[in-house]
Length: 249
Image (cartoon, rainbow, N blue to C red):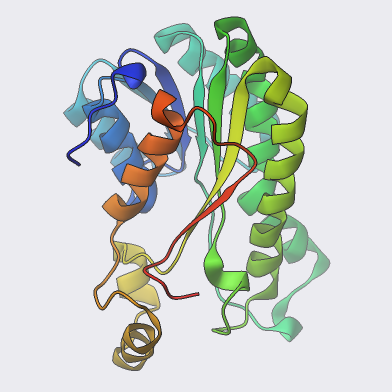
């Protein structure tokens, strides 16, 4: 990342799902800006390793985001360690494939808990910090999956499309406190998980046919946009959806 945003230096940032993939890139990007970064993940080993690498201004908490009281407690620990949180990146999600006949009521509810419920409750937990500071930025991670005709996995696509509604609702309610809320919508980002689990030669060939940019998109393509949206340079941007997909959709 070439850009440096002075407005992010010293700010406390909370990132969910920050131990790997896009989340790891986001944690690294904010740390490079001089931000204090707290992040959470279920992967204790990877999270602890990343935090140790990045130094004392980065703090990790192991938590299952589906357990809202546990997540709220983890946020309190991050606040106590790093100070009031004024940037929130709601990144955590899982895109496991499934067919209509594989979905049970419990699975459907679990997918929503994994992909969107924690976004609301994290915003609820930090918005007063932002209000006291005179403003803040919330970035909710969406997905182009519900916009394009690819594999069918209805619970994921439905929960991710709901992120747009959540973003607009929070932007309206929190805007009077100078809290900006935006939705960042990645295309197919080639994380290790995607390459290992879902990418096939046929799938990549179809992606390159449909994308305007004929290259693989990588986590840094998303982290650089997240850092910009959190900065004062994006100070008039709220209630918007920012698609970063190389022109796929």
